[in-house]
Image (cartoon, rainbow, N blue to C red; front, top):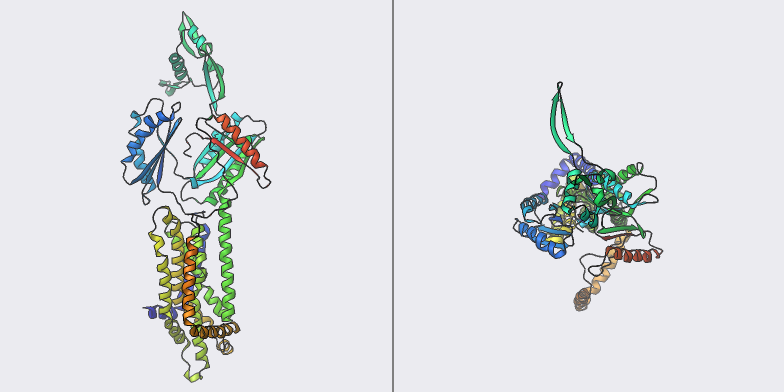
Length: 615
């Protein structure tokens, strides 16, 4: 079979070259437009159910809200684990599915399960809501809003009703969590004394507030050939109008809301707060949807923010440089690309020093870009991204990629030179020489390549997060290595037929390079000594192997190495029951201490939690 493949390539040389050019062009286009990320998606298919239960203690939340939801979703198919967290005013349930479960199917299953438990939840508890499809690794940006003269209430209102909807409308954004500032409320602060005086109960006050602040439909009116929509407009955003709402009549006199309560605009009680460099600020966390290009989405968000700033009050500053996952991605990918280029450069130098022929060097190097492009196309086809693990697999494979080609080129070059030394009437056809030379070493190359591939196969038997993390590395390495093998039996003989068959060049290249000759002489002397001291060589090898095993047992253990993202997360955990005000004081002191470090440019703080935030 191998001889047929090599023969087909040599017979259809132009077809092989054109096909290679098309492959390179198509692969380059795919690589440029492929999604780039730091790591593969390490999140198990997880559906998060959030339920707000304002005013309830953690024990009540757990018993009356969390437990019914857990009971309902536990029986869903393919559920691997159910976890929950019950805090004051909120229930969070994480439903984890098997790794191969489709996330959209999982969300539908959970949604069907929780849709039937609404009647079992206490009055006043919010409807269980599915959190957006994202993960902690999906947090791609932190955005702060500060102002010189705009109040914290107006700042939060702008964030909730202008900035957040605009960001959510950006394709690829899953969620924008807002914390900090003052949440605007229309407050009715009842006076028990006045209510007692006018004989008004809390239920009377609540009923009047709910019924007054709403619009109602009055049907249609047909008149003079036209149909008019009739509606009663009761909703208002005026504090004065709300205060004049009638509660009831007492002894013929109207009793209004303003008679028994103070009506005003105020800040809602906080459950979380934010700051920038120790000063109050509104902090927004932007989370992306799965399978979204982080770099492209970051550019879209920057453009959206720049567009919004033009229409906001001039004293408002929006900072998008606090945390940007795109910066870490660019730095990580840039470092690995640098390693790839440096590795390629070293390969070029070494090849030329050994072959001392630029044509043979060029033929050997062609295997690198083609093999990497095939690996990228395979990753794209399998749904992976370009990340540090997939690029790491390619970087590991760089040295092996040229191995097949260089052995083939070296042997072809050697046989062509031997053929050129023969009398003209005894010389064999050059294509026949190339075919025989390629086939001569093919079995040993295939065996060596498959041995290396088999060594990486255990990576694909890893399950869970380990498998998700290392699978792209193994795929990139194995596919690129296999692609280099295919290149060596197809394109390499074709290029040899075009570039290494010049008679003048073969006549000049009559001996090995000076480096190869010296290495051969040195190796001969070393081999002679090793054969004289056989036992010493064997026992030394065994001793080194034992030392290596001992050193291995002393190495540290960690799932992942430390990463320098350019940012640090400092978590301050206080005693249960501490107030938000006291937590803020602790946070401000920590920020001030951090800002005394010259290397720290900016700090941002999130204390407590935001509404419907699973983190």
